[in-house]
Length: 210
Image (cartoon, rainbow, N blue to C red; front, side):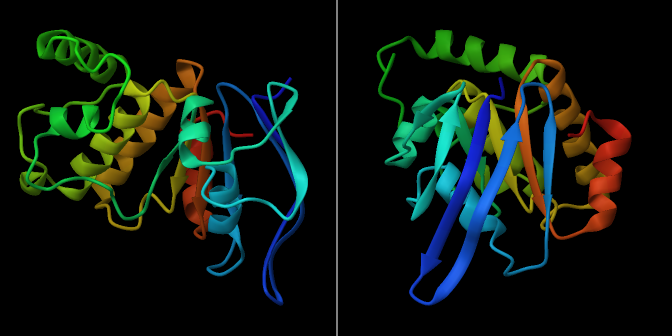
């Protein structure tokens, strides 16, 4: 059974049809690459999956059960998280503060306990960050890694990457590819959105791509 299955999903904005009859499956430990030109409706489809938009037609199945992601919070609670092209971080706050920002469960845990949890996650997935560094002092690649850690801390099982290489240097792209490989090794699912065919080939060379 796929982790997520979309069946006949459709979304229109007035007379503009962004998605029509979309069906796909996303399996644990795999990367599903979604390739298309700018304006093809890729981001709209991901917004449906992340609970930002509601489909006009079709069904989303989670572990084989029909479900409705009525909000981003519901999607996050179901194990779905998105790494946005434009990062949603507070520049004046530290890496650790950004990771735990907005958490409600376990809010009263000691900071030392939370730091230990984040440290363990970072080591597991090959992410090296100074948890006390301010976001404003980080490179774009490091900021993206903070976003990834945020999702892992929230126990996301599916990570959606929306054009993740657009703001990265070649070295940072290599680091991202390695992190994605480590994510799939640990059983995470990845949806990789891009309009660059060479990136799909690069991911296929390094990771298990569906």
